[in-house]
Length: 115
Image (cartoon, rainbow, N blue to C red):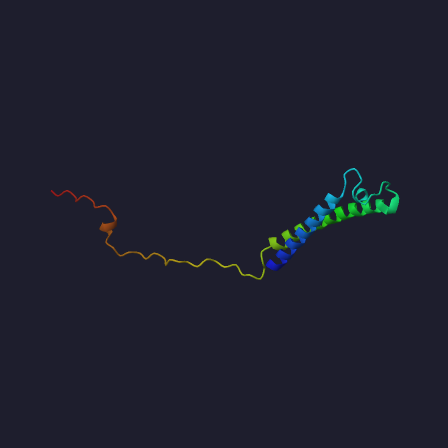
């Protein structure tokens, strides 16, 4: 169970890093990688396809992260059905009734008046 959780966490971290890289490579004004490679027009060399690829990659990685997180919660959230539930053992023996005289446990009564 722990190895599956670790694997899912590693996949989530890799997808998150890739998502950050892809988002940082995009330009909010539509330039993105097209301005990096010196294309002045978005019609040259299929730069519009690059922006489509970046958008699809962003959505795909975002969805992948959400699915992996939900999967990790579902897998690790359930208690294991194979492990029996153990009840804690009693550490003390039950108290024994003492056979001490009653006068020791109860307050002494005043003696009855004599005539």
